[in-house]
Amino acid sequence: MNKIPANEAKISDQAVTAFGNTPNPRLRQVLQGLVCHLHAFASEVELTEEEWLAGIRFLTDTGKLCDGVVRQEFILLSDVLGLSMLVDAINHRACEAATETTVFGPFYIAGMPERGQGENMAFSPGEPALVQGRVLDSAGQPIANALLDVWQTAENGMYSGQDTEQPLANLRGRYRTDGEGRFAIRTIIPVSYPIPTDGPVGRLLQASDRHPWRPAHLHFMVMAEGHRTLVTHLFNHDDPYLETDVVFGVKDSLKVVYQPCGADHPLAARYDFSGPFRLATYDFVLERA
Ligand code: BEZ
Ligand code: FE
Image (cartoon, rainbow, N blue to C red; front, side):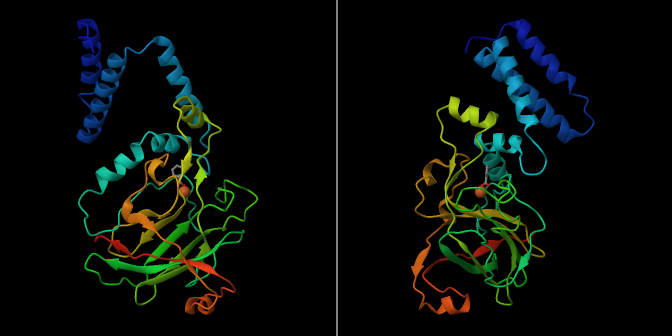
C-alpha cells in the first residue's frame, strides 16, 4: 500500500478523535477501533465512490430483508463473513473441558414444545434416527434436569417457520435430562442444505464463487442451572460439506456417526421404531457459570 497522503490521514485522525469523549469506556474503545479499521480498509483498497455507494446499497438491501422473525439477513452476512465464528471463538477461549460451541444461526424459535424422553420431534419424512447421550459437568458428573433445545431442517433443507408447509413444531423441541443426566431425541437424520440465497448475501456468495451449503447438522442449546448455556451443533461425520461449511462452523469434536441399527436393537422397542433406524450418541459437557 502507498503511504496515506497527509490530508487523508488527517480525516481519519479527526474521525477517531471525534469519538474520544464517549463517556462509556468500552463503547469508546469499540467505536474508535471500528472507525480506525474502517478508514484503514478504505485507504488500503483505495475505495472508489461507486464501490462506496454499492456498499451502502448492499447494506440497505440487507436491512430491508430482515423481518425480525424468520429472516435475519444481517446475521447471515456476519455468518458468511466468518465474523460470527470469530466472535464465538473470542468468547469461548478458556473452557478446555467443555463441549465446543458453534454458530447460533438465524432459525431458532423459542417456546417449542417440551417433549418426553425419546419422543419423536419429526412430523415430516426422513431416515429415522435416535440421538442420545448425557449432559455432564466439567468434572464428568451427570447433570439432571438439564434442558436441551433442539432444531433441524426437514429433508427439503428448510426449517419450520422458513417453510410454511411444515407445522411450526416440526423438528423442534425441548428435552430434559433424567436423574442420570441422560437424554434421547427421536428424529430423522439431518441433511445438508443451502442457506437462503435470494437476497444480498446470496449475491455476495455468487459474486465470490462460493457455494451456499451447510453440512448436515442438528442444533442444540443446552441449559442447566449454575452452568453456562452451550450453543452448538452435532454434524453428520460423513457430510461432503464439512470442509467447506459456508459459515465456517465445523469443529472436529462435534462430528457424530449415525450407526445403522436393526429393528431388533434393544432401543427399537423402547422408542417405538418399527424398522431399521440410525443411532448417534454424544455427551455434552457444560462449563460452570
Ligand atoms: C443454521 O445452521 O441454521 C445457519 C447458520 C448460519 C447461517 C444460516 C443458517
Ligand atoms: Fe442449521
